Length: 281
Ligand SMILES: Nc1ncnc2c1ncn2[C@@H]1O[C@H](COP(=O)(O)OP(=O)(O)OP(=O)(O)O)[C@@H](O)[C@H]1O
Ligand SMILES: [Mg+2]
Image 1: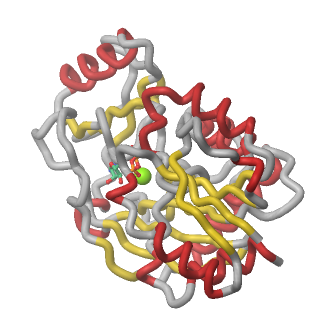
Image 2 (image 1 turned 180 degrees about the vertical axis):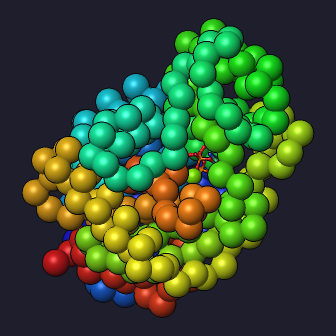
Image 3 (image 1 turned 135 degrees about the horizontal axis):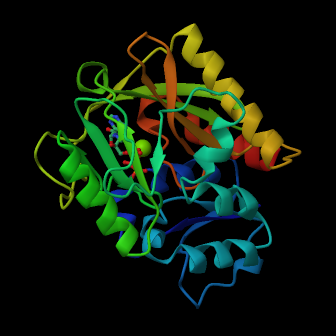
């Protein structure tokens, strides 16, 4: 078979997983190319499957990216998943399923209710790499940040800052071909008082993590809900469920990474091979 792994011109240097996928494909006797998603010279029809990877520059031009996804004959994950998952407004629909999600206030304007908390996070609904995201301890700063996002035509999200992230980090649970593969702990990313205009690439520390039974349950339930909402008839090629821990110790979904997640392949034996086997079987 012939596979393409899609990346972006600006960010491919940040993706050290691409060569692992190509090597795993070659090991199984397949041809594989690394392709820039918006390169007009590429004939996408020549590939049996196109796998979305580090297309991380789509956030400023999401519509173009979704249109590209819809134009690809055999895309993983499918274009409907990408259209749904590239804007965190999906969390509104997802939360209605009853799966625990961090409380979110949308498009907050001055003096709107944002709950009684010591700190908040304000972020745009379309983002990656925590761009334009900040942690604030005063309501005034939350209102100003949210108003600036809304004034720029973006959807703003305000959430309580989940304090356990400072000590316990975030848990990313990786599924390949519908099966749980491995999990990692991502250290805290947002520093107090630093504001939103920060490049946080490479800041986090990643270590292996064995998820709890409760985390397994919420992650599996999350994927079942996605499958129901999007009427999927086969498992997603890849999925990452990112969880944090509420003050009562229970897991909360922070986001579902179904578009272009880092899969932390280095933290699991042969996970690139598992993905290739899910593609060619
Ligand atoms: N409510 C919150 N409480 C604590 N930390 C948060 C919260 N929201 C976001 N963060 C921190 O900010 C980071 C980025 O937020 P989030 O994952 O929602 O956005 P993103 O831009 O899609 O980022 P990334 O691509 O890095 O995952 C998280 O990994 C976490 O460290
Ligand atoms: Mg995240």
